[in-house]
Amino acid sequence: MIIGTPLSHNSNKILLLGSGELGKEFVIEAMRMGIEVIAVDSYQNAPAMQIAHRYYVIDMKNGKQIRDIVYREKPDFIVPEIEAIDTDTLVELEKEGYNVVPCAKAVKYTMNRIGIRKLAAEEVGLKTSKYAFASDIDTYRQKIREIGLPAVVKPVMSSSGKGQSIVRKEDEIDKAWFYAQENARGKGGEVIIEEFIDFDYEITLLTVRTKNQGTIFCEPIGHIQVDGDYWESWQPHPMTETALNKAKDIAKRITDALGGYGIFGCEMFVKGDEVWFNEISPRPHDTGMVTLISQNMSEFEIHLRAILGLPIDIKLLKPSASYCFHSWEYGSAPVYEGIEEALKIADKIRIFGKPTTRPKRRMGITLATGETVEEAREKAKKSASLINVYPSLL
Image 1 (tube, one colour):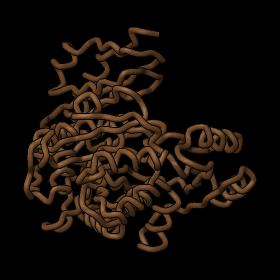
Image 2 (cartoon, one colour):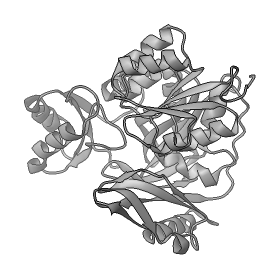
Image 3 (cartoon, rainbow, N blue to C red):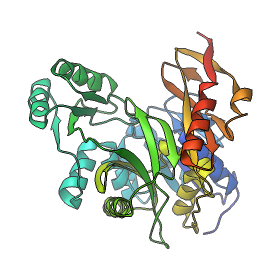
């Protein structure tokens, strides 16, 4: 691997599609390695745009706009950071010789819950919850009764828990349908209905496909989601050896089926020694932000090294945790209070720098270490509770 100089004729270029908080941390790592980065997203001043060499604001689902930027910039790597992208265009660009990370197939499959669930359950043969799909409300009502209550309802096209709900009672069935429709991303209004697994816990197993070192795993990350969205994560999560081996086998089989090089966030449900595949993202995972403090290499550095074909040697440093803090009203130019008090407890804080606020929008995280995971979690949670976010402009 030869690395040139940013903003010169021999630069190595990454085109980042999606410029949120995960993209921002990835750009920081790319900058440290001397890579030129062009950030793209659907809104002005997204976090990664604030530090990239250049940026573009486009409709991320408009394939022509994506193609125009690719032809103009001629990147060495196209790195998707979000799901809401015209993935068919990425497939076409890969056929033209552009390097999509980890590969266009992985990005296309994982954006659409139909594709990834059928791949996992029907082609790879992984253990999953019972599931069904519905594109109209009558079929949906029929399928959810076949699956049985409680059930989980999600838009086929979404991410970060958007539009997801748990249906526990009959009078919640239609409400979940309309909630999924209102919060779907991309094209179409199809939903997936899943059997509710009474799991002991859920994990993210960060799984790295490399060119020269095979498949590498980080220590399992435990996490808590609220309405399907990440609020808290910690590493390592204790598991039986049997469950961990099953999780690694599941992660390797599904990532091998997807292909390409880079980091994948594989979400799984665990009950005792039993493990179910849930979802997977072909990029750094939001729950993996704990690796900013828990490991010698964060998930963002690992992703970059895997893309570039550089050596990876992951070491867990100390039990660690992350906890999110949020905004609670609509506005812009947010202000953060309580940072000084929070840093008396947490080891680090990351403010994402998002330009606008809305209810329950994730605006930053606290990061803490401890002698135990429990101590780290308590410190991260307490410090996050001290931070108040409010818009200065309503």
